[in-house]
Length: 394
Image 1 (cartoon, helix red, strand yellow):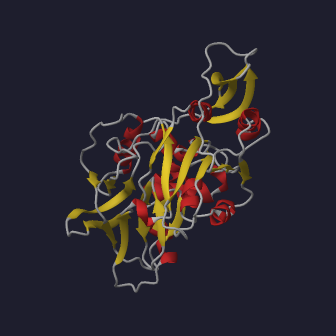
Image 2 (cartoon, helix red, strand yellow):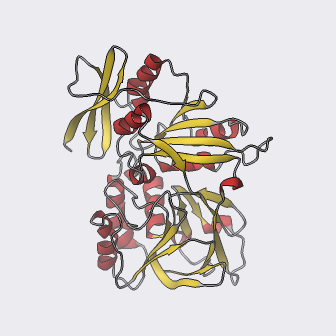
């Protein structure tokens, strides 16, 4: 795989300017090097950082995200820490050491304080935090939680959807003040059995959910970056019976769709990868979801072609055609599934919610003849102890 070397300006401080040299192998960063003004060319933006002195600044490094960290690719140690030290910016560095680390950190958060959290991760780490922060406060004042997502995961759907396309440019935008916090709409899935999960990227059943389960649980696809998704897709299309009957009904009684689906997703952002735009009408900052479905009437070849169209689509493009369901939705709704049976393969019950993986069989003790209902709710800003914002250049 060819490695590209990029040199990007970062920030100008008193008597010193910094740039960053990055080595990019495919879609993954293999090395970073902080350069001083003696090593760099061109105009370097001045530091205009403005952090609320009363807010706690925490860098959360999900070290297993993406292709992981090495001494050569440790963005915090090589780039962020020296710059923060030069600026005398007090902060806490939190490095994950287990799958439970972010949930443990979230439970330490004081609901009566403001926070700025910088995530060196993908989307799932942010979802893990939001699903574990306290949801009540001892005071009547709602506190603020501002999130900066530095894209070091595999797909980085949120970051790519808000214009934060590289670690260096994102950190530069934070330092020079061009990135501003805006409200991040949040949604909630209630599963059969009562478990609730917040999401802001995607809830899926069928192909996408199976893909994430396979890439996460099969060691053949570990440490491969975003390329793992294309490789695992072939295995699913060749071996899985992608046929899941479901109906979507709004709480006001309107049926949005009723079909057998090979791919079914509720999507908030336009991008799921940097160059993959499966939901071109989406806006991650708008309080609106899109239903995206490809029905089981499509052959494997047709399904593959339709799914891969996301690499050709651009923002605001139309999406329609035989076997395609693509609809916006702006109110609470229900997904009604046929009850699963013991004879049904487990992959038929697999779901994905912002990279968090579940199986409906584990979440429900419903009888075989009962309905399997998944409820999706639009959350209001006052449903949480924190007003959650995301730094964006939009």
